[in-house]
Each structure stands twice: as C-alpha cells, then as structure tokens.
Length: 198
Image 1 (cartoon, rainbow, N blue to C red):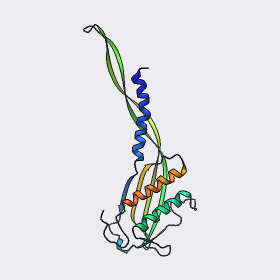
Image 2: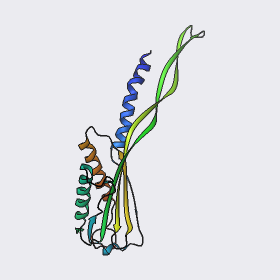
Image 3: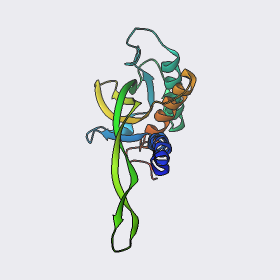
Image 4: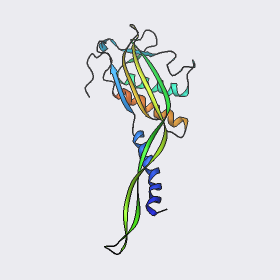
C-alpha cells in the first residue's frame, strides 16, 4: 500500500467529519404563511393538548423543552399566554430519520513504467475516486400556528438538521435551538398587521 493510499484512508474520516459539521452548523429553515390571515387580531396564544409530538398522550422531556422554548419565543414577540380562549394555538412536532449519503473521496496512486527516452522508470499519477456510504441521523422540527377561532393554519415553520448528539440532553437542546431558529423567521409581533422590520 503506497503512502498516498494510506493518506487517503486518513482523509476519509476527515471528509466525513466535514460533511457532518456542515450539517451541524444550523438547521435549514423553511416557512409558509397564510396571505388571508389578519395577524393584527392575534394577541394571545396557548398550546394544543396534547401536542403532535406527544402521540402517546403524555408529555416527555423533549416536548416540555420545546414547549418552553416556543412559549419564550412567543412571549418575546408580545404574545400573552392564555390557556382559555387564545387567539392562536401552537402545535409542535419533531421526529428523527436515519439517512445515508455517498461521499466520494479522491485518491491518487502512482503507476510506474520504463521510459526509453529517459532511460529510467517514470511515475505516472493515477487519479480515481472511492465511494463511501455515510450514515447519519436527521431531525425535523415543526411549529404550527393555528387560528383558534377558525381552526385554520395561519403560519408554519420547519427546521431540518443534524440530530447528532452524544446524550439525550444534547439532542433535546439541539431541537430547542431549532425551535428558536424557526421563530427567527417569524415576522409578526402581537397585534401587528405588518411584519416586523428586520
């Protein structure tokens, strides 16, 4: 095995780490909102009971952390938490999927041939790629804002990113940061018809 071949074996874990680090820099956030909703009417909020991610019918450590982050984000925008007769109901969902990507790693090796012109053996570089399968976990967090009176979705945000984490607490913290990233894209404040200036 040549030195370059050995170096390529060292390079593969490094390339994989770079790929996963790129996924870990922050979630990809997408949002959508109703053009017909009158956001100036919305001043209070509450949560759906149970939340979509509480499909077993009870709260979990994850659902409590996401609920707390969503409440903090809504109150920071002037919305008042009001369990009885709120203007908006907030629903939260989260799930993790196993994913796989093909990572192509460049390799360089050398072939030797005898050159009669140079009267010596000459090294010729041989370029090729090696494909490696990389498995990882991708998490998705959804935030839905629903007009409580009309029972109609008026705004939603979705964050997709790496679900890596050594401990359950780290994974919950990453999911809570995804909720915060979603709300960074929420353009309204309580009682305001026009989106807030950024």
